[in-house]
Amino acid sequence: MKLETFYRRAVAAGMERDPRGGDELRRLLGEEADRSAKLEKDEAEAYDRDRLFNPYADTRVLFGDPATEIRKVAVGIDMEVGEILLAHTLNRDRGEGIDLVVAHHPEGLALAQLHEVMKLQSDLLAAYGVNVSVAEQLMDKRIGEIERRLLPVNHDRAVDAARLLGLPMMCVHTPADNCVSSHLTALFERDKPARLKGLVELLRKIPEYRRAARRMAAPKIVSGSDNARCGRIFVDMTGGTEGSKNIYASHAASGVSTIVGMHLSEEALENAKKAHLNVVIAGHVSSDTLGLNLLFDELEKEERLEFVGVSGFERIRAAER
Image (cartoon, rainbow, N blue to C red; front, top):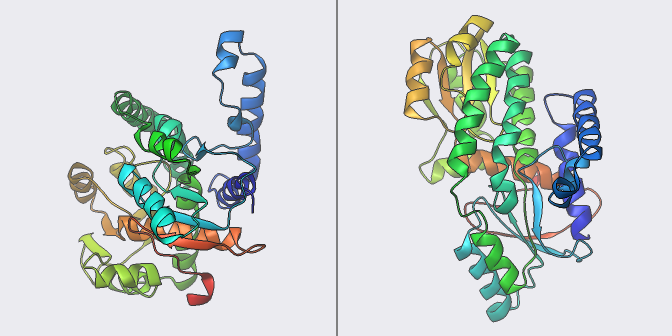
C-alpha cells in the first residue's frame, strides 16, 4: 500500500463516521475550494492543499514521499523524538523494516492546526439538542484558548527527527476519534445499559478497555454511582481536545444524563457535577487505541499490513473482538 493510499483511506474512514454526515462535509469542502480560489499570491504559496479533500486539519502526512510502499508501520499514541529514534534503532539493529511512523496525537503542521477541528464539537452538541448559538459561542471561546496555547509550541521536533533519519511520518487524529465515538454511540444505542455499572461492564468487554484494566487504567465512574440510571448518553470523544468547561448546564437542559469521555479536567468535572450529570471516563490511551484499531480494520480490508505497537498502542483486529 502506498503512503498516499494509506493517508487517503484513513481520511475516508473518518469521514464515513463523522457525526456531521456526508452532506455537511461536502459543503465544508466546497467552501474550502471556493476560499482557495480567491487567495492572493502570497497566501496561495503557504496554502495547505490537503484542505481540498481532507476536512481534518489534525491529520496529515508530515514527512515522506507519497509513493512510498508501506508494509510495516510503527504506531503509537504519542510519537515524539524518543519513539522516532526507537523506530530507527529497530530498523538498524533488528532489521524490522519499518516503512512508516504513525502518531495518533498530532505533530508538526497538524498540531499547529489542532484548534480548527474543534468546530466539529459545535455540530455534535447541536445534534444532541444544545442551542446552536450557545454551542458555537462557548466553543469559539475554547477554540481561541487552544489556538493561543499552541502558538508558542515547538511543533516540528518529532517531524525533524523523522526527516533526518529518513523515516516517513504521518498522524491520524480526528478520523480515529470519529471511529471510537461512532462505535461506542452505536454500542450504547444497541445495548441500552440501564445503569452506570452496566455501562462500565459493557466497556470492559471491549479488548482495549479490558487490557487497560489490567494496567490499572480501567473505565471509571467519576460522577454518579454504580446504580445511577444512564438516561441519555453523550459520547464525548471527538473534536480535537476537551471542549468548553461551561457547556454542562446546556447538556443537562438538552436531556443528556450521562457523559462518556476519554478524559476530563477537574474544572470541567466540577461543572458537570454542578449540573447533576453522570460522568464515566473510559480511558484516554485505551480509547485512542480502540479508535486507531477500528480505523486500521477499514484500511486492511483490501491489504493486510504489519504493525509495531509502541507508546501505548497495541494492534487488535476485528477478528479478536
